[in-house]
Image 1 (cartoon, protein in one colour):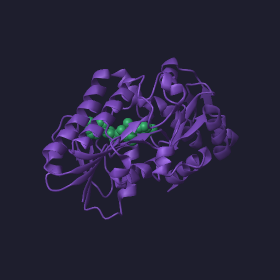
Image 2 (tube, rainbow, N blue to C red):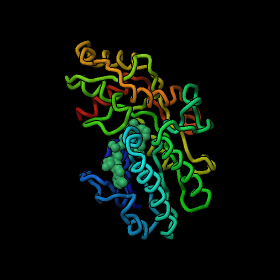
Image 3 (cartoon, protein in one colour):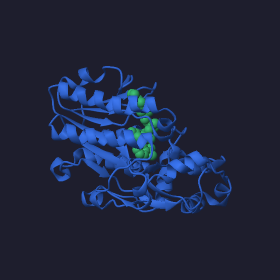
Image 4 (cartoon, rainbow, N blue to C red):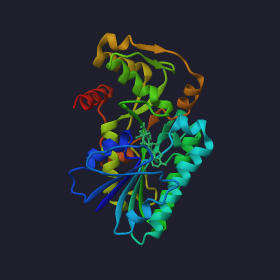
Length: 310
Ligand SMILES: NC(=O)c1ccc[n+]([C@@H]2O[C@H](COP(=O)([O-])OP(=O)(O)OC[C@H]3O[C@@H](n4cnc5c(N)ncnc54)[C@H](O)[C@@H]3O)[C@@H](O)[C@H]2O)c1
């Protein structure tokens, strides 16, 4: 079977591909707008929202498609037109390619807790809570989730959505996500570099390790669709933590010298976006379905350290 990973050159795409490699797939194809290299994969550079890359790949047989390509949070907030064009336009193009292909494909879409917002964000959110996103990013992802459900109901695809927490720790350069500081506050000090935290220490975020999140995206592809029913979106396990707790975990893993490299410099725009996201996640459905969860913050950071030292 052919596996396709859109956005496969990015942070989570690469980790997901590590999970997929060695599982005996005939071919793993990465489609990425960036000029990327991913070992062991066929890489096609292109824009999933505008170029007709999929029809040829989907013509031979049923495929599994992981759809990760996306404009992310702060980037979407800064450029509404681009976010709608890429995130909703890209999804429509992918679904249409599947529908026209003559084969039944499995599609796994990566969404976000930012589909929740407003009054719902302060309280507990879970798979049965109404989606009232407070930003363009969350709105485009909520639309994507609904399109996946509808295309599945119509029998065009076998769709699934992994609704992800804020994933830490992102290696390398940050992308345009407003949550980027939640990775930078570990990545930079652990490399001996200064880092800025733009929100208050009392801010609560729902975070998950990159390794556990990639594993969950992979597992979602294999899950019996009957168990999901018509609502194909699953909130992937995440852990609520205050920024103060994250700083304490940094100190435990990296020592006082790492903690001393953090400066608290408040930024209203980032804070507003982060505050609009949920603080507590009810991930019982995912756990009942067999998805693993991180044990604690410290182990998340240690798995990052292990990854970069590999
Ligand atoms: N990292 C997180 O904390 C997090 C949290 C919730 C949801 N998500 C979702 O998970 C997915 C992956 O996130 P990530 O952190 O790996 O992001 P990333 O920015 O590292 O990777 C995204 C990749 O998609 C590619 N891309 C963007 N537009 C494209 C297009 N039109 N055609 C082809 N490729 C395109 C980019 O070049 C990039 O390599 C995204 O859908 C994101 O919304 C991530």
